[in-house]
Image 1: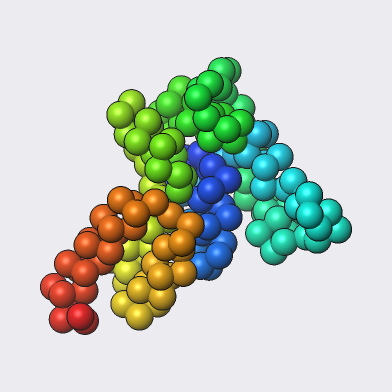
Image 2 (image 1 turned 180 degrees about the vertical axis):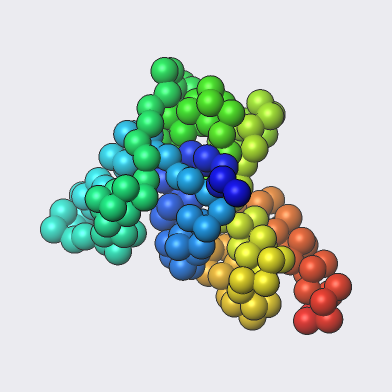
Length: 170
């Protein structure tokens, strides 16, 4: 079965890397990246310009191996940062999934009928399809709580709790 295409936003990449779920992403999606997102992911840290973060190194590796398709929208959505604006516009214009982790852009995308996945939703999905354990899913959710909007986190925690309770794991 052919995997659906998904457009990657910087927020999903960085937060997803933090809790080690990015490798699972490619099991479910073919991933494309706008140039603006690529630039944000690979941008040097202004405080420590010599540092190379592991999420940057993984991005470079996957890009070099052809795991990330580069695509750009014809127009950006003006009210967001460059990466979010490009990712949202590309997903909307091409009818693709949108992978992001920012509440404002998520709300806008869902209002426009764009299919979206946040990192906490992806973690719950990984638990649902039994790729990660309940303990791992909870640790991953806890690991991103400080970098994810409260509404998104609460919805994911509620979904996880319901699944875990049905399985007798909570």
